[in-house]
Image (tube, rainbow, N blue to C red; front, top):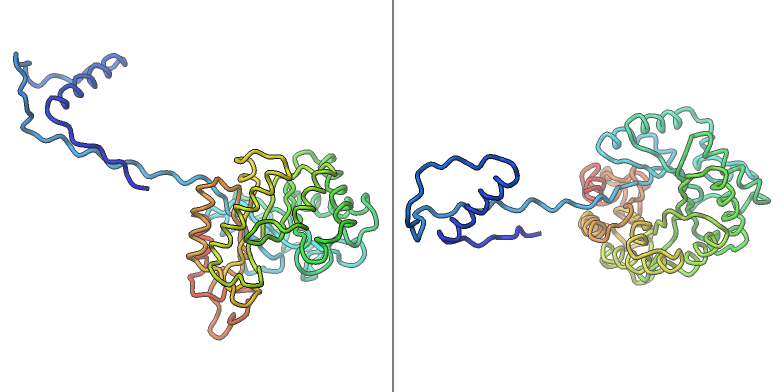
Length: 356
């Protein structure tokens, strides 16, 4: 924003202002500044010394919009503790899926007892940051589609939450799973059961969105969760992979999706305007997206960060932290690469822009 300029004052006005300032200081209990010369009977009409130029206005502080990037459990090469030292306060670690019947595992075949993953999470916490677990995702089977009933499903979720001491849980529901009302109700009832047993457990949903906002299935899932007694603290929209004709300005699409999702979140969850913005998280897929022609650039990230700050959005995220680096020559183009962005950038550039 521009600094607010102040017009220069004439001598008489300056003298009056100076007298008023001296009286104000004296009234506040401080000694007025010493006089350098005795007062004259007739003060001069004009000052021979021009008034000092006022200092520039201080910069406007950016509202705190924390970045909580997605990190794949298998991406051991991405150092969350180093990112925490750079100021990233939260990571969304995914994904927990069903590994055969109602048994939770990390995707990539990583067991819950994996010591290396436990050590990575512990290092993040020692650095003063935290980790949110994410269940579901685009690949694999989400536990609610496999577990037979609500108690069994709640036990599976609790096995992950309690083993790692998670206090924040995300449920990334997409694809065919999103359109399944039976598993949606089972999931919501299990989550409500978990929250009753673990007061303070924060629950968020990661859901598909389009530039026109949340999809109908996404809105129905949120409404069902609320009806089953889930305390929803966050709604994360996936601003990516729109398909169709959406191959233009991905930054503008993300902003449009946020604006339109905000209205739906406000209505479904019964929130005020400000609370609905605070509930919202926006997650772009940085660089080359899965849909041909969709590319989210660093300029798009800068525009989204400015918008988030202006609206007071709860969080920003990105898919994914391990992709926040340039691809080696000959890799990552034209399709997406799970380990690099596919665009020209410095390592960590998207984190720097989105974190402000």
